[in-house]
Amino acid sequence: MDGVWEVQVQPLAGNGKTLYSHLYVTQKGDALSGTWVRSNSDKMPFTGTFDGRLFKLTATDTKNTVLTLSGYAENFSDMVGLMTTVDPKDKGTPFTAAHRKKERAGGY
Image (cartoon, rainbow, N blue to C red; front, side, top):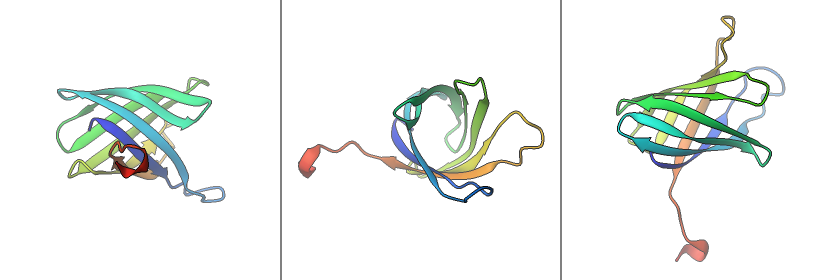
């Protein structure tokens, strides 16, 4: 799970526009940590777990809203899951993520 993941959140309400962001993930055993960068001014630390297929990440934004991303990873290159809040009425917002390998500028 180490590396950068490009996240695509697909809201079911509002304008339905896909929201793009990045997860910078570090894995140590089954523990995950890192930063969820939703914009230049919106960076949230997160912690989580990964058992080889299922993951769960928890982040708290600047308004103290707790967000959880949970789902499964496919071949260590794709994530599929739901983003939820602690609100029991929250049915979740679908998201996907793709692992992005680090590449040098110019493709070299």
